[in-house]
Amino acid sequence: MSAQKNRLLPLEFEKPIVELENMLTDLHKRASDNDIDLSADISSLQGRIAEERSRIYSSLTPWQRVQIVRHTNRPFSLDFLKLIASDYTELSGDRLHANDKALIGGFATIDGRRVMVVAHQKGRDTKEKLMRNFGCPNPEGYRKALRLMRLASKFNLPVVALIDTPGAFPGVASEERHVAEAIAVNIREMFGLEVPVIAAILGEGGSGGALGIGVADRVLIMENAYYSVISPEGCAAILWKDRAHAPRAAEALKMTSPDLIKLGLVDEVIPEPAGGAHHDWVTSAEALKAALIRNLDELGALSPDALMDGRYAKFRAYGRFQELTGQGGAETLDVPVATEVAVV
Image (cartoon, rainbow, N blue to C red; front, side, top):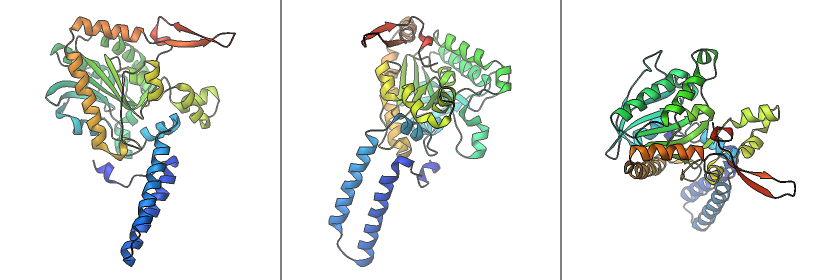
């Protein structure tokens, strides 16, 4: 929690709120130093701050949401686990090559419910960022996650996947160890898990790096998180040859929770405090915990066959889109293979 105690650096679009809050601080100081009654002015300014905060946070653009989930004080997977789980015991290694510290996992208890957690983990300072490889797993991370998920299935424990990654690591060594194959195997094998699987996107949900632990019965997403086939900067570099078009790309990708819930690519949006989870870790964690408990209880009542059939049907249903006709109308089509248009 130490990172949360630091002064929060405002994002660019939050500066009007910060200016008003600084004015409010000055008013309080003047009233105290000069022993005068400025309660009317203080009350009026508090009203302006509330109005400005409501105006900004009720109409966030996709790019602004991306900025929020990349805030340096946003809680990561381990931060959430400390607040929602007890008895978390990390398990290490893929039994093939190494222990990837960008993708962690182990046993945990959430409100009396024993689960297996697999999660992406980023770093906060430079040393930790390097240790966690900036939250970008190597293939051994996905193989470790699969080992833990199979262990969970063996002992009839639900799987909780916490997603927060820009994407799998694309380096030469990662490719040499077949990162694409590791992700593909995870996607295939997760369809056969006979226990409930819940995925929660906490921040960034980038490409196959996210989907490698994201094949779940329920896919939840934090209000300001995103889930996309590519980062806005990557998309802008490809389509417009300039990363400066990232805000335009974020809009076009339909990558944030309001669009994802409409498209049926996620099942539930978990609310965040005004301005994002970095403003209030505890409230954010409570909302995440409540959503996980509710879905764990609902899925726990289903048989293994019902879970696997539902999971398969869910992902096969991905791919509904609208195609404009020559007359300006729209025709709804279903693509039989989810990966052609789904978030992969």
